Structures are given as structure tokens and as C-alpha cells.
Length: 494
Ligand SMILES: Cc1cc2nc3c(=O)[nH]c(=O)nc-3n(C[C@H](O)[C@H](O)[C@H](O)COP(=O)(O)OP(=O)(O)OC[C@H]3O[C@@H](n4cnc5c(N)ncnc54)[C@H](O)[C@@H]3O)c2cc1C
Ligand code: FES
Image (tube, rainbow, N blue to C red; front, side, top):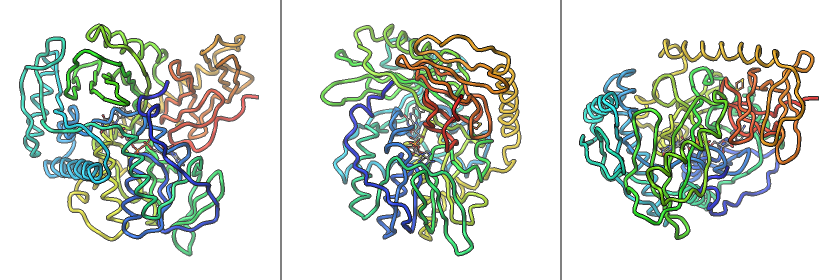
């Protein structure tokens, strides 16, 4: 599976890594958060490096739907059910700042984007009630949403909630422009360098260990999706949610707005014009990472749905990605506990990172540079402590149960012959759970124990990967780490 964005991405040049260098700031992760933060620091005169384990944009930023909207599903009513009105207003302010910054950046750097209305829709009574509640939350937080019941969708809807004049873009065109600006300001981008640990020596700053050698920095920003290093316990309050997208080539007229259903299953729609072709992107069918046994079935279901309502559309791409749902309903952004005051992280955008990543970058760079943003102090006051005790406990309980059942089912099975092409299975060999799969005619045997905190991985049929149900680490068929909090590969299954 490959996204429309990654398949049509402009080249982002990187340079060879030489270990031993020292920087004012090192940003770990070359997605939207990392590249924006690095650029802001470089513009302020910092000597900055981005260390990216894969390629810039390879993970969530290259597999998003890239709607740049302040209407974010039913997110604001969820925030107001957890927090006071002041924090909800700070959330809107931060996201508005993020949206304005990135659109201004696009204007100044010749990156195209399209202005579009964002429209939530409901097809059930309970969905309509959620929209009423979201409208109320938006109105109180200063967003000019409008309730209605007319849409350009090819099926009847019960209610709509519209926010005019939002935007959509090609996320990798934006990332390439950020990288180019970063370089212009003296910043460096190193790809294929995975950070594996950090220490805070008495002499000050941070020493980072990577799979290619060490570097030092006065400040480090973990812009890795879910933070690596586990110092803040973030993995215990974030739910990794994976969902699916397809891009269909269209010649007939399709709805121009950015639609999002509030009923289950979720359906997200937007258009894109790339390389002279028009596409309709349909997303949805999300679930917790590692918790669905037939992920290919979810892609097929999205395709069926799209073909039913847009019969002349031709499926051209399918892909999937994950983002992290915070127990506290707002992102965790700030200094990492036990980071000696020099390590920062930003996570928990809940599938709304196009604005939240930029807001987090503005806040973190200001903090590092000694500036101050009142909205950020309010928005990011939530810490990884039992502030949201109930949800945190629930997330932990789920994790505990999965850990147990993962081990039991892993140990209960006996080894079969080689799985058929594209299939994988966890079996018991002696006392060890082993993952066995066949991909492109090659059988791979790996340890099924996730190096992060010893969850048992399961096979993802759509992507042909090993996915950990605990905190969302994912590994290629041969055990190479792809994403999530793990910093190392699955062990060999020998
Ligand atoms: C299906 C889907 C649709 C979405 N649609 C939208 C949308 O329409 N609008 C919206 O606002 N948001 C959307 N989002 C959310 C948004 O895409 C993300 O929040 C955002 O891209 C996150 O960017 P990031 O830079 O924080 O993370 P990422 O893009 O994941 O970047 C993190 C980077 O860190 C690197 N990394 C990880 N570990 C290490 C390590 N140890 N060493 C070095 N590098 C490391 C990774 O390789 C990766 O490149 C969507 C998310 C999903 C899953
Ligand atoms: S991701 Fe934490 S145990 Fe696998």
C-alpha cells in the first residue's frame, strides 16, 4: 500500500550523517511537527539538525488526509467534557495560529492549497445530537459553525455542521518546502538515523545515541508521533488508532467540500488534484492498532462504499496510517519529565495534526527560545499524571488485558507449515512466541515479542506487517521497526 502523497512527493534531499557533532537543537522525527519546529528554531539562529529514522514524511504525515480544519469532528465537545471553557478557547486559538502559520508559509513559498468548507454530517438521530453538541461547543469557543441539513453528498443526511473557508493541501509538497527553507537557514536533515536513547550528562544538554553514532544538543525535541524514550509515560495515556484511505481517480463531479461523518463507521472525504488528475479521497474504518484480524477487509469495505456512491470513480491508491488519541482529549506538548529540562515532546493530535503539529511547533520553539504564548500555557497545561484518572485507568486496563491474552493465545498455538503468501501467524516454539509469515515468496520467522514492553505482535493482512496491540509499534515482515515507541527491531525467531 502506498499513499497518493508519497507516490507523488517532491524530492526532499537529505545529507550523510556524521556522528559526534554538537547542535543547539536536535529534532527527532521528520514529519510535520519535526520539520516545522526545526525551521522555527533555525530561523531564530539555532544550529539545528533533524534526525529521521526513515525518510521525511514516511510515517503519518505522508499518509494523512491533510485537511487543515478547525472543525475537527466532535473533538471540541470532547474537549469541553474534559476541560473548562478557557482551555477549549485556547485549543481553538492554538489551532487557528497553526492553520494561519502554515497557510502563510504556503503563500510565501509558492505551495498550493485549496480553500474548502469543512462539513460534518450525520445520518442518524444520535449523530445529529452530537452535531448539536459540537455546534454549541464551537460557538462558545468562537468558531462560526452553522447547522443545516443540505449537502452535496449522493445520499440523504439528517444534519450537517459547516465551517466555511478551511483548507486542504498535499502534505509532502508542504514538507518539501519546509525542508528547503530549513536548509536555507542552515538546518540539516539526516535520514535513516534512528535515535535509540538519550542521557543528560552533568555537564549539561543531552547526548543522543542513534544506530549511526552519537550526537549532542542543548535541547532535544521528540517529534516522533508517540514519544520514544518512555520517560513521560506517554504510552500509557495514548491510544494508537489506525485508519484507512483510498484515492479514486474521478472524471465526474464529486462533492468539493471536506466531509466527515460523525456516525460509525466514520467516512472522511476530500478532493485532490495531483499531476493534472482529479481524485476523491475516502477515509475511515479506524480501529486500535493490532486489534483487527482482517485489515484488508477494511480497505475492501471502504472501496465498496466509495464505488456504491461514486460508481464511475476508479480506485487508484490505498493506504493506512495511525495517530494517537490522548486520554486527556488535548495534545501533550512540553518538557518531558526526567529530561533534565532539555527534552521536549509533542504528541496526541488525535488525527488533527495538520493544525495541531504546527501549534505545538510554535509553542515548543517559543519555549526553547525563551518566548511566551499565553494560549499555549493554557492548552498544554495537561500533564501525564492522573489528571484524567478515569480514562487513563481505562487505557491501562485495556493494555493489561491485551498483554495477557496476547501471551496466552501466542503460547496456545502449535507451529503450522509455512503460511500462504501474504499471511502471517504467531505460534509457539518451545517457550517462545514466534511470528511466521510469507511475503513475496519469502518466509520470515521473527520473535513475536515487541521490544518496547513485551506485547505480542499480530499480523496485519493489508500491510503485511507485525503490529503491537499495546502501544502501536509496527514492524516489517522481517522484523524491521517501522513506527511506534519501539526503537529496535523484532528479534530473530531462530
Ligand atoms: C488516516 C489519518 C488521516 C489523518 N487526516 C488528517 C487530516 O485530515 N487533518 C489533520 O489535521 N490531521 C490528520 N491526521 C493526523 C496527522 O496526519 C498527524 O497528526 C500528523 O501527520 C503527525 O505528524 P508528526 O510529525 O507528529 O508525526 P509523523 O508524521 O508520524 O512523524 C514522526 C517521524 O518521526 C520518525 N521517528 C520515529 N521514531 C524515531 C526515532 N527513534 N528516531 C528518529 N526518527 C524517528 C518517524 O519515522 C516519522 O517520520 C490524520 C492521521 C491519520 C492516521
Ligand atoms: S508498543 Fe509497547 S509493547 Fe509493543
